[in-house]
Length: 136
Length: 112
Image (tube, rainbow over all chains, first blue to last red; front, side):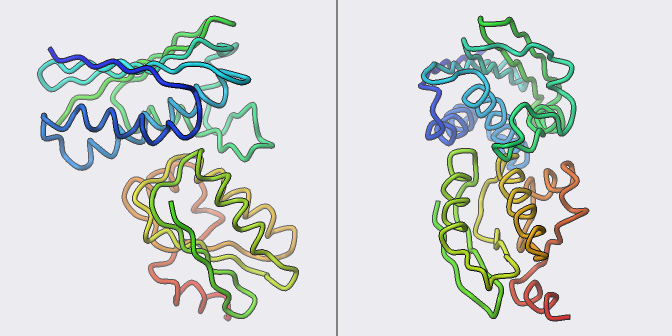
């Protein structure tokens, strides 16, 4: 098993850092270009959710990855507002911020690009998204 | 991320390069806003130089579509491919905004 953990400020300029950190961690497994692009997409969506919806101003995002054989697990966690209705939040096109030009596709994309997505959230405690993907 | 633009008749052609995420969409939105004028009827967004785009890009394109629709104008895309194409399809954006292989084809379709 190989593990990696990072914490960074919940600011939008760290979205590209988060994508590159996770894809960089995976490099030694020689993943396919498709797997790499899928994982970058899912991580970008999860981290953007934490930054936009988790906090009003400052906060921290934590990413934790584990690789065991060819199975990847990625956790994206924030300690912010939490999601009141997870079922509703996971619906395609649902967004709490339509005025900010959000597409409401975040969870739908995570589910489409990863094998499995779990969401745990508690009001005013935060949200943890755990995603799994078998590397080909 | 880099942005360039040019005018062809009443069409604003915006060439985007690099990654499009939530951080950059605000910059792109402002750039397009600053380069708009009353005479511009259409926007062609060229994504052939874009290496990565997530759902924030879909939201930004949809936002421009809404603005141009109010002016009876259009938005077209150029060079959507790979995972960008998957989210373009998944979001249903393809139903309202067309994607072309070249800028020339996108501009020509507006003249018809």
